[in-house]
Image 1 (tube, rainbow, N blue to C red):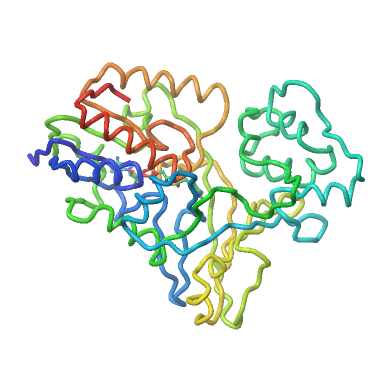
Image 2: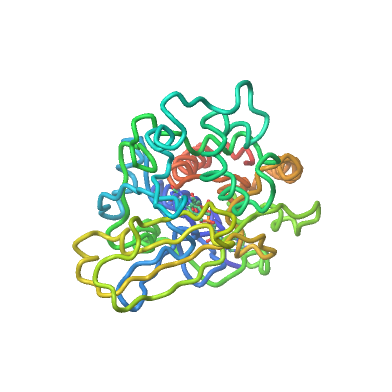
Length: 368
Ligand SMILES: Cc1cc2nc3c(=O)[nH]c(=O)nc-3n(C[C@H](O)[C@H](O)[C@H](O)COP(=O)(O)OP(=O)(O)OC[C@H]3O[C@@H](n4cnc5c(N)ncnc54)[C@H](O)[C@@H]3O)c2cc1C
């Protein structure tokens, strides 16, 4: 039976950062990954045209932390990439997040938000930022496609992920440091895991007894799957992706790397991506053709499709019930976006993994 101080299950950002930190501290660590490739959700690959596709959806790295920016650049060169998105509204590619100038243009100079008070759900929280017609056109349809339920049944917290831009700032995020690894996320993750034993294509849960962790097992897969779903299944939303190569295009087809489709009558697709727009401009210029990818949300049954934890009270309570079990086991850490049933941006996932590593190295293995 292979033995290591630490067995890390999952080679996504959480598992890779923890494995790197433990290895750097001289600890003995092995990583086990279910997929045939490393990198988890940030994995990317090259289309035959040379266009880089983010396999599990577009990933724009950003952080405000000098320390995190230095950490990620330790493993790769990043080129500057500041995501600017559009939303297809009334046949036009309007800016997303919504520009205040759009509201003045369509509603009038003296517009006010449609909701006043303390929002109790996503719809109210959104209406607290904008007039109702703007909410209907930009937000409601997109949100209901994404989650498959009426927007008023979702948590108000979700609305914290966007705002109305008083200054018309077109950047999706305003973080100080933004970019994408020049050779792609997969190469970046491979560099992070350099010198660490990584076993690909192995489902740890199917072969639990094959490894023995002398100090701690770190599991970054779905927490409910770890326990055989015996308290019930946590719900996720995922995206089906269809890719189309347009060979006869020398430039670009879309006005931005990501165009959202909030109109409920435009079909179930939620957004279209043009990957070439996300590549370094010097590399993109040399490529003929372009790949467009359409994403359509669905509710996955199998863990491979789990992308977004479902933001409602029933799932939160079920998660808490699983979490209490982990707390009873001092040699087990369940963490990461699937282990903590929580959406983490990449910088948040890295920051948390660094913090958990320090806890492990302090040998204070309080289960998490
Ligand atoms: C569609 C989408 C778009 C996103 N875009 C952005 C963005 O633009 N910017 C940003 O900052 N963040 C973005 N994120 C967030 C980013 O993907 C996460 O921060 C990151 O994936 C977290 O890494 P993780 O290691 O916690 O999870 P994962 O990357 O999911 O890693 C978990 C790993 O564990 C493996 N695993 C699970 N079970 C087992 C098992 N039983 N045995 C062996 N291995 C197992 C999985 O195969 C996987 O490789 C996005 C997320 C999604 C869903």
